[in-house]
Length: 177
Image (cartoon, rainbow, N blue to C red; front, side):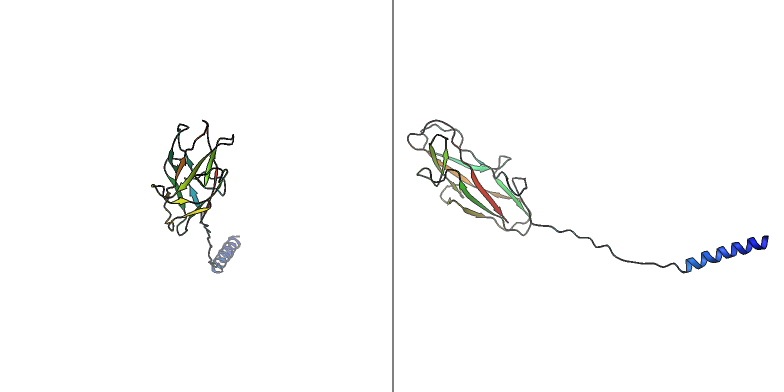
């Protein structure tokens, strides 16, 4: 019986050694991929539509004011901020407003909803000498991946016969990159 047991152990050991001798190693690769597309944020927010490019608030003036100056401010109270992927060339196009051409003295107009209009314009300089026309474009330098500040100014001009009230306008803006 011992001989049978010894033979079984030896046979099992032989099979184990034989299976180890036939073991093989297979090698290969894993391919990893990430595709990045260009993107931009306006005042810290990103979306494909409905972004808030800022507000041009002329404040409170009396109905007999001459001119009122303001700057487009982003959500944090500073100038408009554009952050785009490195290598892109951001361009901001300031499109039409709701009341463009409704009042002489400016290309745009604020309205009180009762048929009264205050003329105003956008400017690209603090001295308000370079008017940004309707559909005008502000092209920024090639992005390095750091936020860029966009200074856009406005000037409203008073005129005789304006009643007191709240005057507003909505201007469409596009960002391409």
